[in-house]
Image 1: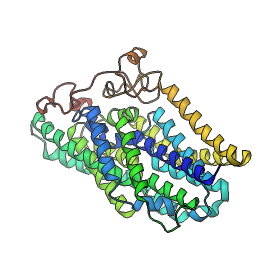
Image 2: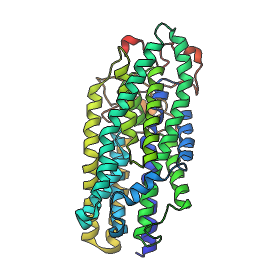
Image 3: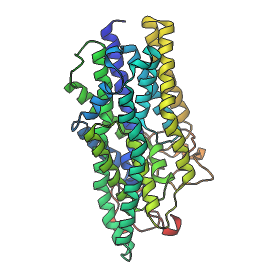
Image 4: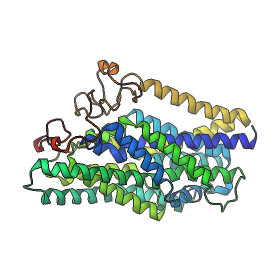
Length: 426
């Protein structure tokens, strides 16, 4: 395989990762707005896609971190980059299948570090950058998000005490549309940059651009589009877990969670931190439950997510390392094609498994049932609309129902089934 064809294969794979990133992380911005029915699901993902596209053009600091701050670009080869990308994509798809809001960012970093360790050893990893730009933010970001969202929710609850519920819900529903839009914009400024950084790393490794090069415009544009398309298709399974599985939120909690997420993500993008927007969004949702008096937080669901978070870096790294070893064992073009074949086969297997029962925009807001857990009744498989995400039985989801109008009448916010549970049910 010529160097040009190999580079093209790596670029396509990087864009595939960007697509799964958008697909996997749609819930970070829109889960709470969908859960409270501030936005209809399809309208929410369309709005999020547009704003992710715009956000991708606003900052390149994170792209520089991924390209030059995690691994040594001068010792990286294109097969290593490909192996790392496969590690990130496989973990993204697996956690999507399981309905777990896991970090796409850490999956990418883990896959790259694992492939580099297998290829050149510890000398190829810039450990200072990994610790300061990845590990420290990974530990601090969700804690900060929990604290900020918890405090914000508590303040809102105090300020709206005694105010009629219909009135508060009406205002906060419209506020949620704005705050969710801000999170989508912030997500684009952070997550789209990661694939830009990987493509820049591949271009440097392939000798197409010098080591001190910036991100080319065509890379920015292609990554922005891939992220937007993935976002538009909507990772309904993860959206459901974030919106219904952690906390039964009302519009006040939703706006507080989204505003907190946007603030933390935008700040991290400014400083070039490769932050997990999933960790921030999840922390904010948990914080909204902690800060709302009488709200119920499902810590069992949160515990499963925490375990997945801890496994993301090593698991994606292991896949990346195994892919590099497979490349090396077979050698040459055949080895590279074998790794790409692993990606295609594993992706197809996960997709086939996901087709057994559906979670899509028609049932994403069904009430959470701890007894049923993730399983959807088989009859629901025949009720969804064409074009929705059809996904398999996993440990985080429930049954089917229809969702509300695009932006529901603000006068019905407090009605039963409008997405805001009575306080006793929270």
